Length: 326
Figure 1: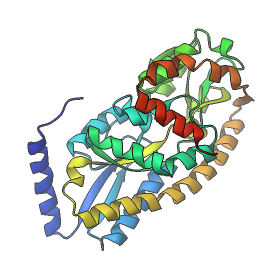
Figure 2: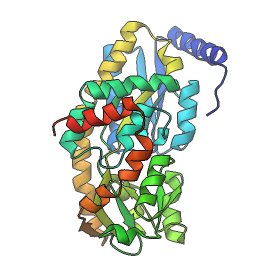
Figure 3: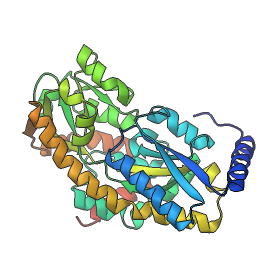
């Protein structure tokens, strides 16, 4: 990633904040690739309400949903430079830039939703959030992204052998590319917004995602097979530009962290409802959902762990995650 000169970026932001201060209110722009009404979009709106309450209206948040400010890779860069203030992003979109966060992208690292929450709500989760400052953003909290499974336009995936030679879209993460390769498939990194046409035109056979994303993006219209192998539970993360963060008072920084943490319960409630609704919606469209024996898929991931968990510190982190109850 390229980097603007930090002093120049800071000057631009400082000037912006001073102008806003004159009008007694700063409107922070937040990006999300998902559509209006999606649980993460609504959670960031709730975060904005809480932040406004905690700062007596001095800070408010405007959410630009539906990729209005760009796809994830572009908005990460803009957030690093302070052009975008806040960003709800999948940890997977950061690729391997943050080693500690890379561990959360490992296939089957989380055994269940309860395990996922127990890890991220505790000291391990805070440790991973703190690591994001190395890439010029401050990570505030996690949102649920559900369990991701494979879906495609041609057949149900019942076994690892069924993956052989199939082309699946993945986020731009080396781990996800290697995960699909370990299963015998061909990974194709591409922007989220291009998946529908990619499946429709046969450029790819399918993709992998959770129920709500599969539903709201319309992918259920072109991919009629959804196989519950649940290979990933990749956290969503709400980040603020470090350029913006460094311009806040300690009191406002604390208010922002508190507002972010308090928005999590609301997002989880919305997420659970969205999963139920989306499952019903895709079934109504004729999508065939099949259960999968996960054991062979888990076994196939050994080369991925061997490649990405070589550092002793990361090995320790993996061990601590696996030792967490849930």
